[in-house]
Amino acid sequence: MIVAKFGGSSLADTQRIINAAKILLEIKGESEVVSVVSAVGDTTDFLIDAVKNAGKIDIEKTVDELYSSHHKILGQIKTTIDEEDEKKLKSFCSSVKQRLVLVNQQGMAKPEDIDYIGGFGEKFSAFFLSCAIEQLGFKSVVLQGDDNLIFTDDNFNNADVFFDRTNDALKNKIAPLLKENIVVFTGFVGTTLDNRTTTLGRGSSDYIASIIGAALDSEEIRIYTDVDGIMTADPRIVKRAKTISKMDFNEMSELATFGARVLHPKTIEPAMKKDICVKVINSFNPSSFTEIFRKNTKGNTTVKAVSSNRDITILNINSTRMLNSFGFMAKAFNIFLEEEVSVDMVSTSEVNISLSINKCVSEEKVQKVVDKLSVFSCTTLEKNKAIICVIGEGLKHRHGVAGKVFSIMGNNKVNVEMISQGASEINIAFVVDNKDEKKAVIALHDELINGSDN
Ligand code: ASP
Ligand code: MG
Image: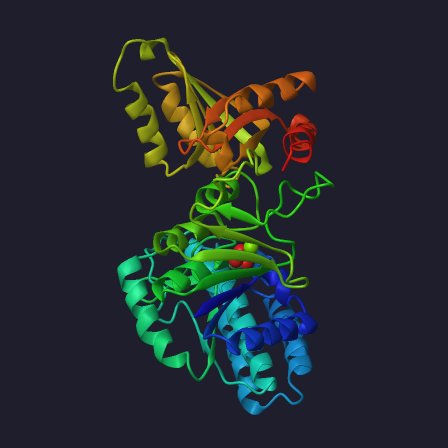
């Protein structure tokens, strides 16, 4: 069995949806297939905007807009929209509407409302892709993650999966359908044990594809997207960036965590546990792809990719009490736990801890952490920073790469602030000012990737 996930841009209009259906039929010629879908284009943004502003918008008009844009696509996929289809579209729209009305009465959107409404994008797109498959003469079944399949906790907007229960449900439900059908599965959404819709975080349809692939021991997990696989750098910053043909799970997890927005960072984990190859493919140009496996890169490529992540906040915790004392670190990190703020990068010295905080964390949360830390330390914030990350399995085996990285920065007059070498020894990450981000990435890519012998 092969899992094939299509992102929002690969399903952005009728032509693309039909293109995805054709790819699925081709796969089905050789293997069973489950397709995981994101919402069409930027439907998720539209829905989340609507629910967050339910008090300000014209609900009637917003839902009409949702209905007509989706009705139009369906009309192009199917020669005739029958009563059943019409009913389905209308029932999705009326569920969205009812909830928007409720949110308006409540006076504010709760995280739970955002997930319930935000998750409809995937329900529409799964329905469309399934119609497109049927139009091509093949049977298809739609499954929804919140229909007792992807079980999660109730941490709405970023829920965690209960794997044992989910894996059992997926196997039991999907396996018997595979022979006769192309199964189309909603990305993004899950369900709490008491049947409330959750989402697994923005961009998490990739992760759901990997969860399904691992649960059913698939041969391969294919992520169809609108770029040529994983690139050596962001092509918007580095014009000469190239597709990386092969990389390993560790390299990909570091890369996804530190900037490359092609794959959701959690995607690698389920695939890696079952040793299933993840393939990132351009749906418009399927000959361009990256394969991600367990250890494949003993080769001599030292540096695989340079990534960056801007608008990061750095928190400096300074305390002379740290000197020769114990328990300080535990106390400091416990505050991050209490406030549920996750940290990307850490570097410490005798009297200082520097941490980078992801831009997803709200300013209020960061301020709360600072207030609590200030009780026993001198804590300061630095904004508008960028993390630069140099990644490659080969970094482990070669000497002098770190030296080279920092002399390139020196030669380009880029001031480097916080340095950390990943635990897996395959990345070097450091912080620069936002304004130096592009210069740093271009210089490193030019000298370590383009200029190297690989
Ligand atoms: N549609 C969701 C989002 O925009 C999930 C995804 O695309 O993976 O975040
Ligand atoms: Mg994505």
